[in-house]
Image 1 (cartoon, rainbow, N blue to C red):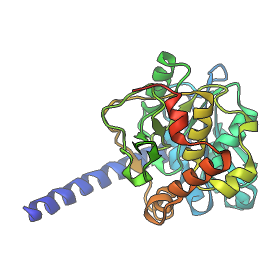
Image 2: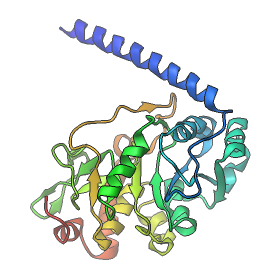
Image 3: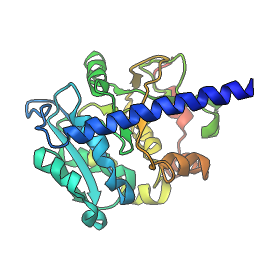
Image 4: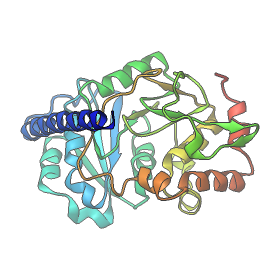
Length: 294
């Protein structure tokens, strides 16, 4: 039985590697082609950030965004000033074809939302990760969902925030992927994988206190964003109730990911939740009770 499972897993990994190689080749081929999905009349922009070694491969994520079957006003890559010299020829090629590369203060993964909310707050902002090759219809489905729920945050993946009585459970005990829940609801936390669409004006630049971010939740942007969303009464809705979207992680990008840092290597999510509640003298439970009931 165990031998069959290993054999099937090996076959699955071989098939997935072949698909990845095929997608890589297609993205490389499209790199020098004219970008067709930029349209200044669009109400949507894509915002992402990258750093260090990942800047070598983020072009794959960006090219997969330019290959989407929907119109975007801009695609903006936020890069810390200290990483300016790491912009490679592939990123310059994309910049020549329409990518906006913007340099800013290094506030880790927050860069993609803090500065987008400052300079592009009149657009609906779609955030994506720098380690994913996105399916061609990924953003179109987010946009379609947003048109149905224009005041909600739209996403593919979200976790159900779980409690025991009034006490929030450890992050690892939440219901990952929130099975059986689509929303809109206040009880799920949108996570970046797959992309998240924030309606215009969801966040204002003033919502981000850099001192609080650096001292309370430096590595947990999803948690901090959720706190602001609850303060504003903004609900979350998923593209699918149960179905998961097949995503391709860019090779050799996961060793130092925030997921590894926050869940595997430590309890940064739980620490951030505790610090936020203490700092603001309130709780996630109290805030969610004021929101929608499932």
